[in-house]
Length: 288
Image 1 (tube, rainbow, N blue to C red):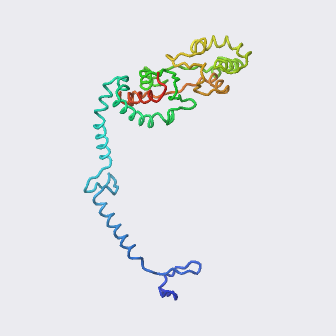
Image 2 (image 1 turned 180 degrees about the vertical axis):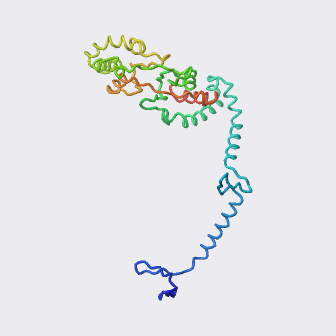
Image 3 (image 1 turned 60 degrees about the vertical axis):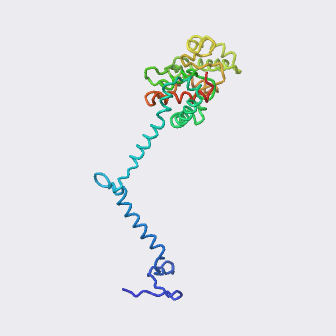
């Protein structure tokens, strides 16, 4: 074994490690660093004894304190449920109208509804409820299925096009995809719908589509195109368009007959939760 060299400027032995002519000095580690390291080891050993730490084949070491974050979460949730129990019971017993008239109940419903909306509804309707293409805006006064408290509650409870009993189920025909109309007829019908919303349109196309609308569309949208809220049929004479207001958007809707699905929340939420969400949506939108 070769004798270690001494670094002449410092008088310290080297480790014989060398990089690009630079030799590593064999200096001892600082005492503060060593004591910190020893203390960390001691703390780790104490933690292993007191708390759950090491995995095994059939579980893990429990620790003499038997600490369990899972148990703590269950206890915290139980405490929160008990805390909310009284207010929840009042919410369940009151009608939707009584909740809106009672400042205390309304404040509780609004707070709970805001959290529920953010966790469950904002993904589609947006954090502010303003919706997007294919997702209704809940902040205006246009309601496909009605904007009264009871109608909003029913829509939340049963959903739309879910196949569940009670769910809204109106379906727009796919006039182009299913070859119910020719492309030229769909083009004319697009102009007719544009004219219904009081915008400039090709008068010749509108005249050609008048009979087509009467035969294919008026049964649902009505002779004047004002829709039918009781069946979720859109009003074609206003400026609100679920799938977009351009000619391309309207033609695409006539051609493909799109229809979104809203979940049946009644299977996931208890009645007071649905009431809170109903009151929140009604209070923040142009409710009827």
